[in-house]
Image (tube, rainbow, N blue to C red):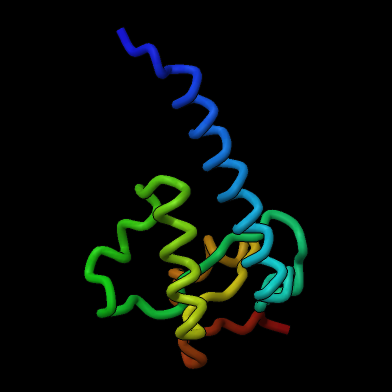
Length: 107
């Protein structure tokens, strides 16, 4: 039985509070708006370019909050973060139609 459970829970709570505050600071530093549409709600911190600085960087969503904040801070130092709203971030990977492939409606 772990006698330090209350202390460990308190530490975990403080860690989450610290990470939430750090995320707010990062969002504010990045302009607090989606870079594509200007939305200010449902913002997600997005890595612009996958980096060779950390070969495991594509796994950052599986990390705990402290690891994620540390990753975001490191990427900020290299201007490799942007804010996207959840809608724009979801569309980011969709291919854009080629101009020749656009269909025109008959008049």
